[in-house]
Length: 184
View 1: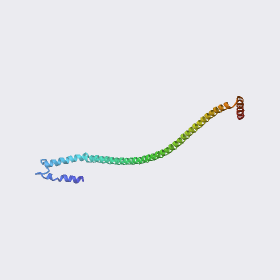
View 2: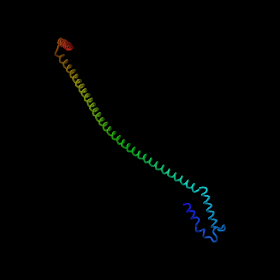
View 3: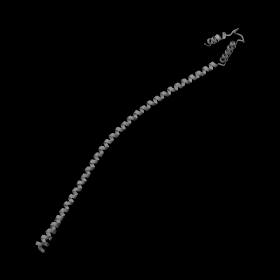
View 4: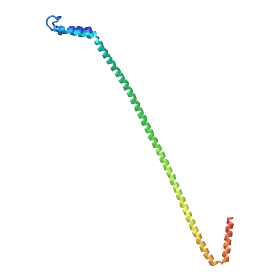
């Protein structure tokens, strides 16, 4: 390939456009062709095409490495993204479970609160009934005591009018004996 391109350079048509002999130092086309060939020769001598090729190969290898790194990073990013999506789904499921458990617990606690409230109401009703019964008992005792006092007062008045002092003393002795007998 290099030889073919060199042949085309030597056969360039502008080199034949000048008048006179071509291989003369007075022909500018020959001088330009000669300078060009010397320039190409110097480039080849110092291995510039190989250096440029090596630099291009290094650059191509660097680009390949960058592409491979980019692919690796993309794959890693996709794995991380998939991991986060899985984690998000898991967290979403856990949140749904937590909400469901909270609802169940709230329902259970509401039922417990209802039962506790009913028990409390029953207890308060029972206490109120007991207070009412106690108040009734107190009222009945108070009425009975008042009736007894009234009966005693009436009996005292009646007996005081009908009975004599000896009869009263005998009644008191009889009542004392009756109380003593009942206590023993």
